[in-house]
Length: 290
Image 1: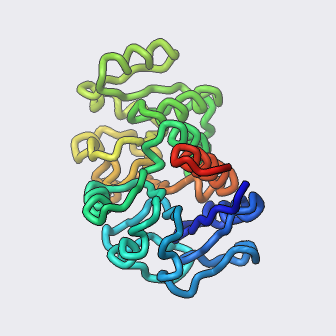
Image 2 (image 1 turned 30 degrees about the horizontal axis):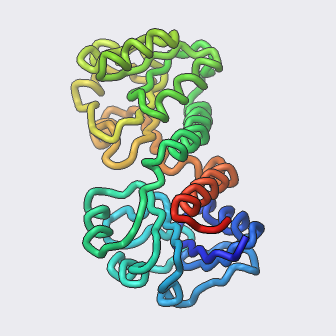
């Protein structure tokens, strides 16, 4: 394979592991906004973002930005304004993640080629596995009961919700899944879970020991929270704003466990391997010689 230059900008531990994979696979790796002792010596640590100009592929963090102002750099104190990033990425293909509508608009305004890798089914499905395993780990850590024989509610039946429900059931839990569409409700019942239509959700909420949310829209307001089992553990897997009124949740003393970016926390090596497969797929689609 001819050596291909790839830059990693920002990110958490999974991107450190990704840098190791890329160096092992003979990529020319440039790093900016990421600091960790495990970054390979063969990677080039950039001292200025201008060194990224004209790098053909740039991999951004997950999420790409938390405030629509700067690139997410949790492992170092480098501040990267989005406008500065867009300036150097004008001739690059950017692999972004969890891109808000504002970010999408900015990429398109600056005429930058990009993709949101979390919208690629090949990646999102695989990424749901460490997310589900991490959610189960958090549930165990924040409760005094076993998952076995407990009652669990999964809000949402998308890619993450499907895998999480499956893994919970394999642990001997009594799984219920909320969904809106009648098709999803039919599938949920077919898989042996209790189906909870959204319009009936409130009447079921008091039955559960654990609630896992995968829906990035607030559907649990004061009336719904008042219906909770007081000892329930609520685990938030969705991106901001999440699925619940956090302030009222805390006011009621409900155990609320924020669980963002779980793959990078609980399984960074596996998450890095998934991102690497995504990069290979994009390189092939872009006609790169591998």
